[in-house]
Image (cartoon, rainbow, N blue to C red; front, side, top):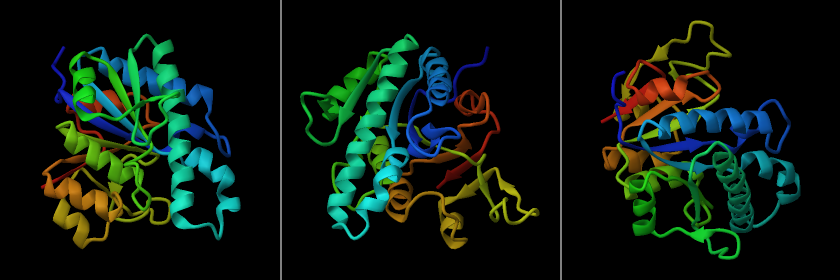
Length: 238
């Protein structure tokens, strides 16, 4: 069997991906399937860190957040990511994978704080890390948290798991002639206004020369194919 193409990766999961076909919340079957994919990669010796969003939980309370102070709403979103991270960590444990959840905001009774040297130690020990609470600051998305944590832990690539199997020339749901990019440069993605990540996250990855692979987490075996360096999804590079 060929060797993995990467030694250390940062996987960005959206909260919405955990919903499956549900309107909000966490679909148990969906999270178990995702965890099985992550476990298979970790069992190859690949060091995996995960940043997870909170849209699946925050969506349920979003109507009540209308008119709310932006910073307050963002802190609510951070707490939603902590809930998702705990669920993901628990599912990994049941799959036989040793995982550690680390939060960017202090909730010491629930989860340990993010400390970079400790995170690096966990990765070197073969543990999967789930980073919760984004960057710990309002006004920054979990995409930016993925770019930041990926840079901090010296990940070789950010794997952005979505519901679409890569970056297209146009919205494939609206344009039947849209074609998939297999590779694209950061500058070209910017020039063509392709919405890969939010601008802050994208700029950080570009400046740190940290490539991004966009792929579908709902596609069976896609994560493993990405890890093995196969032609899956879209690679955004310098």
